[in-house]
Length: 128
Image (cartoon, rainbow, N blue to C red; front, side, top):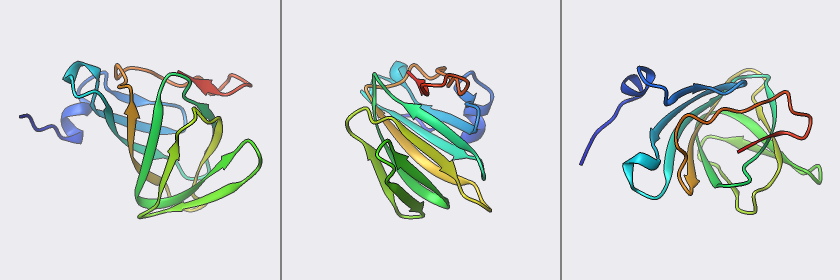
């Protein structure tokens, strides 16, 4: 058994500024659990085009608000208590709220190494 805090992660390379927010990679590949758990902050008024080609992701909102938009133009508001699931390596837009950050617990399978970073300057979207 082990215990980690957000503060513990901030002192490592598993605290990642990903372009539109931050990600504390609390549980990663090296922990041997078979999945990753992150505390993810999506900054207010940010927009990111993302796709996880090598991972499935589920995001549970623990605070704030924002939205996710699929490539068909369907927009889903995300608020505390909501989960969104990218079960088909879905390309999507992720947006922070108008007035507040979106705070998520993100779970990845297979696990992340923990140091991955987005490239939000890629016109096809950031992928890893």
